[in-house]
Length: 253
Image (cartoon, rainbow, N blue to C red; front, side, top):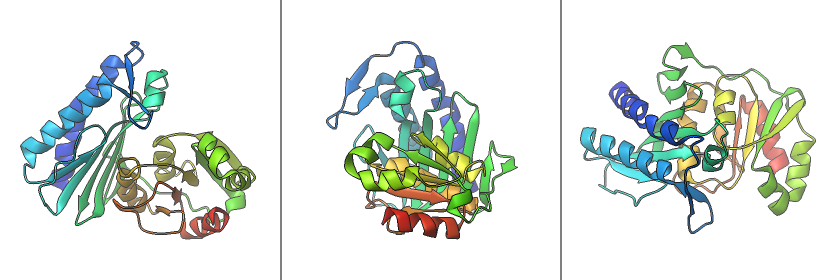
């Protein structure tokens, strides 16, 4: 697993130069079939990462956001989100990320969140969760929602589609913040916040988070408490402790 981690870190260290080149440069925006934005930076970045994986691990399968799946019927499948938070990217917000997961027989065994504009790389394997390879990460020890710092992602979607749940979340926690994308989950793994509720995600949005959060001592599941995999729905909740996670599930259900 260390070989896989070292290799993908080298590939993505080069790949992050692509979005950084286009950031705040007025890049042209296209809309995909689901009306979400995509740019040349998204496509070039994913193409670069795919090429690197194919070179080093030609037998592995690849599932990414911008291009068709490569299914080699391998036990190993790489998950790629080249720019998680394209709306942040195109609006000059530096909190977009690059997400990578490696699945073994469907289970996330490696995760990476790279924040190109912040110089931060969060990784997780069975050997632990780390920031920039040398700072071990631990979630907080908060067990009560009333004492927690709670981040609520995709607030406008929650308000439009599950308004009662959104209202209950906004009344929860010692502090709560509205947010987007991968960075709140990275902050949770690092112990800075205690929980994050997310909504309307795709596998390439959440699978890279699993190994990091679990290796840091946290919990991440769907809203029913189920294990996350390729077939999971887009409703995700992460928490620093099992007790806090259990309390959040009661609100979400």
